[in-house]
Length: 383
View 1: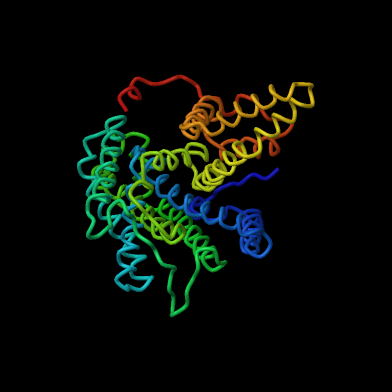
View 2: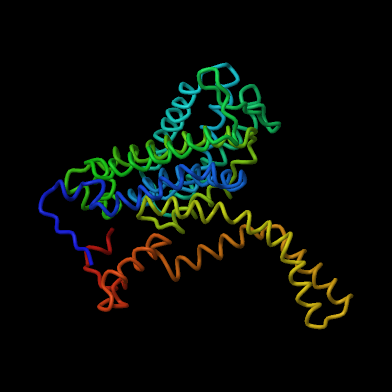
């Protein structure tokens, strides 16, 4: 059993609390570095999407998890980064320049969106961000001289020092992994800085934050800008990975997927953004398995149980029709969100914390350790 006794401020802001973290993260990093050489190209491609989704998740975590500002429009910031990449790359701009430009432009737009959102909270802020996402989607479809409209834009592979980096190459995978590591470390340091502590103070209570001298309006705009900039950087890699972008790819459903990343992973943890990204990326392979393999398996089971050939065919057709139904993916997302909110509001990372604490305290672990007491002082009702 390991207990950490913090005796000064340096202990509180240390990146790795003890050597066990260094060993575990080192093993994980070694596995990720070896992944392109030991895994199939399909699994490596899925890991690339995990990295991209996790980068967006970290950006959204800063805005929603640590500042308490809801957003259902982050697909728009991803689109801004992707279209900035496609347009500047077509003009022959070098990769480092348009990569930074994608993040900066998305950050500026995020700050602009943050200003009118200062007077909005809760469901009204969610509606405002949805409206912003719809406006951006419409601009992408109508501004044909820049975005090529609904016909979409081809995105050529990355060129670095006259070297082509294909989207399925190990180099591209390491580029996405490297950006994810940099973003996570930068976010950790941001949260330990005065700015990050101001974000958390705003999330916990705006009234208390104001009383402590925090400029709530300024830090809300900063949070929107930082979150959007990180998402714009992810949009650059997203465009190169897909090699083709169009307005209908950046819909409300994509924003909902980003929200699911932090809900499933854990809305108060940067590690949760990675766990949630893994979960979301695996939904599409599951739906493919459900559509291609499950009907045959169910039909084979029915035949083994003695069902007639006509009845077996009917069962297979019914299962196939259900697996191919429109809206099934959205229904699965909704069911997953409800289950996590009801049974594990802290997400996958919260579940991992409970398991770790169980083994640390066994046999003294108490089931009510994480149970929230519904006792509020009168001032808490005005948050």
